[in-house]
Amino acid sequence: MYQIVQDLADAVDVLPVSRHTIRIFVKDIPSMGYKTLKVVPKYHTRATTPVNMLCGINTMENEYLKVKINSNGTLKVTEKETGREYDNIGYFKDTGENGSPWEHKTPELDEEYTTVNERAIVSLVYSGELETKYRIVLNWAIPENIVDGGKKRSSRLAPYRIETLVTLRKGARWVEFETKINNNVPNHYLQAAFPTDVDAEFVYAQGQFDVVKRPIAKPDYSKYDEIPMTEQPMNSFVDICNENEGAAILNTGLKAYESDDDYNHTVYLSLLRCFELRIYVTPEEQNYSRIENGSQSFGEHTFRYAFMPHKGDWEDAQVWKAAEDFNMEILIGQTAPTEHGKNPLEKSFIELENENLHISAVKRSEDGLGCVVRLFNPSSETVKNRIRFNGGIAEISDKQSPIERQVHSFELPCTENRKWASVKKVTLEELSETELSVDTNGWCDVEVTPKQIYTLKYE
Image 1 (cartoon, rainbow, N blue to C red):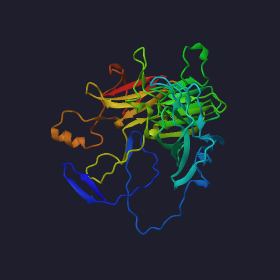
Image 2: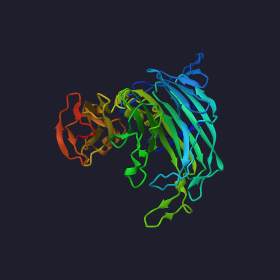
Image 3: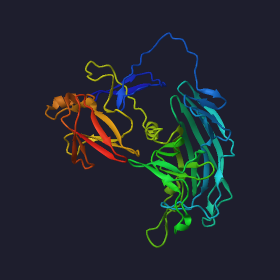
Image 4: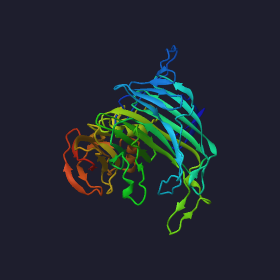
């Protein structure tokens, strides 16, 4: 195998290399920063006795969860700290769809299909000390379309294969799903189902800078001219909880869920809503399905999501942080030893004393004279915290020669060991509001009210 290496002079060399993939457990990586690891070959070593996370047939566990795969492909998840069990986690539900881009509408005589009574093919993909992975295959069948002008689903069934990789990692409080589907059926609504059995009246969905509280109970239909939509928007998680316990569904890129006030208080994650492209910009309906079928979502799809049971409510369980950890994977870069490095082997560029605030932006200020760090507080209480940006050291000044600027541009970060001259609380338009004090070590105290966006400007 050959690796292309590009140097600073754009000279390309082709070097023979030996590439290896390893799994390691790395702790205490600094927030918004880096940690340097040195990989050293070892020779003449003996093999060690394999250690894995298996604890039974189709069963795995880590420090927090025990996960058993049922014969129908669902999971039985035990939260080990409390002993609480969640069964039939991750089955699939499919109904008919006769809606439009703006409206989910079921056929008048709809039929609901689930995988609860299916027989899954389960195989072990990988088992190790740091993670265990199973493959679950469902050779399902669902109605091939809607018929009779969209009034009901067809009696003819089309094969519908669903393949899911289920992964449990060391130290993780959630079990991960990666579901692959090759959608060949139009006009249907596919969801992943999570019967939580959590006694709760509300669910909490991540929004923009906020967590939105919504009732589980359906509204009184008689009060509306149209049937209310039960599918609701979200970003990276939805959580059903009371003050003692809860369950979060984390996801990557999926934007809708549905909560049901059924016996199991099931939460559904919307995977596919396939419909005809009907446009209502004139008094008459315009159907573009014959020339454009993108709204049917034909083809291959991959969905990534996770189930996370927890104690307490979503704030106690730090579900927002969990969703960020689930979605923001660690970036890895390979470097070589250098005699000119000026930074430590590990460092945090942005430090928060507590994890009760979140960072949404780090950018150059609009006037070009400093840097902006934007925080926000999605919780229901005022929080106090301390922040330090770049270790309290300012960026390089612009009073350098072109050669000096080029040399500094290869440093992380670009500094002259000069402290920040000022830190200000500014508006979203970056207009100054308050001058903040900074101690000798570069720490700044902040107090952020509930649902507040808090923007700092460093100069």
